[in-house]
Image (tube, rainbow, N blue to C red; front, side, top):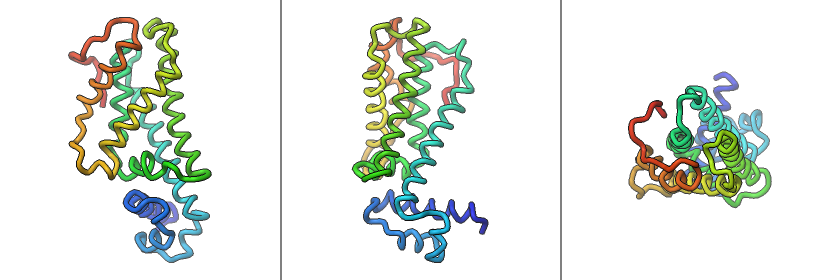
Length: 214
């Protein structure tokens, strides 16, 4: 097995175990056993269990940024109205969380309350989402689409909280009894709550969209 493939195998085992059992209940020996590798092998790639966890979290957040960037690249910003672009941001984020429930669980549940670098890497993800939304809102203000008096920092924090809480409720391992999330419907519901207070023009429920959002 090539070194990069072995590293991916270790991370896949760690992801499953962290999500299922939590950080403190998962030991290095558990990851080694699940991955089917020799004990010394894992230390060729990671310093300790914390290093494994941080690597998983950082890779997840990088994938999120890549997903958002690639999706935005497909949009013709001259042709998309501001509310549809807002919908697009919400939908892409919810869709991303739905793709890997173990990583979603680690980011939104397992990582909460952990000490040191592990806590800071979780916090950085939340801050990245907030910064992205602040940038969108400021651009909307500059272009005359978003209310000039909008508190962009407060609004970005409220939106981030709504998105993360929704993803946690429906996609974490604790969400086993929750009904499957209809991303299209939920996107419209979130948009209906926030858009009237954000945009200059009155909010209109979604009709035929001129863009393919996924």
